[in-house]
Amino acid sequence: MAELSETVAGLRVIGDDLDPDEVTRLLGKTPDLARRKGEVTGAGGRERIARTGAWLVNTDSSAPGDLDRQVGQLLAGTTDDVAVWWRVADRYRVDVFCGHFMKEANEGMTISPQTLQKLGERGIELALDLYAASREIED
Image 1 (cartoon, rainbow, N blue to C red):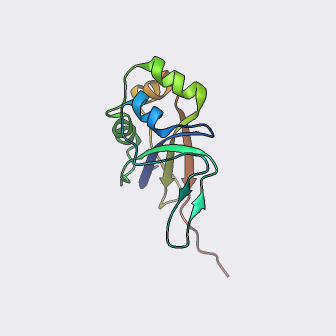
Image 2 (tube, rainbow, N blue to C red):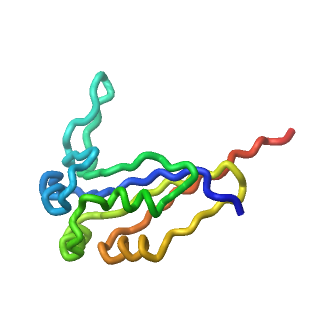
Image 3 (tube, helix red, strand yellow):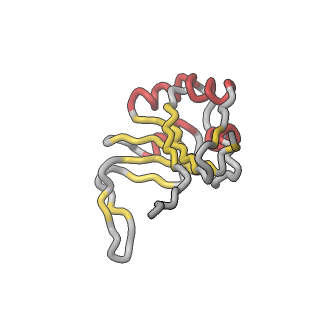
């Protein structure tokens, strides 16, 4: 099995009554993107009304894939107080969203027990999107 070609990851806190300033205060980290439900986002004719509130932190892509490092980056600078994380997770949907991009038909990776423990003890779901290698269609 080949090593996973590329991963992207983001920490997402999502909810209709989400107050981005409160989440920032609780978690101790400034998001890369934040919005309240109903807030107008975008510009230049591409304006949208946010359907829900969101607080997002992203990492750069990693090639080859390295989800352990990316989760570490996402959690860096956030509170270590798991009780605070559970308060946030009880009120909002909290996950680490990961995109896994394969160049070959069979690629894989592992996630360390330490990373899984950090996510679990904070009530953070692990959401995975898998993007398979494209196949040429034969005539």
